[in-house]
Image (tube, rainbow, N blue to C red; front, side):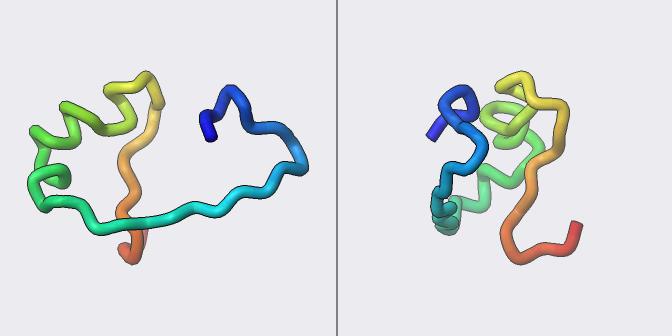
Length: 50
């Protein structure tokens, strides 16, 4: 579900899967992290404290 289609009251399930460690490097985050898509936030890794 994209954020554009999300509406109040809808329910969805979030599935988390392991990613190749290269995606967690500065280069990987720059290539496909939230900021690349225009979001003003840092990536959040599942299972890590903020």
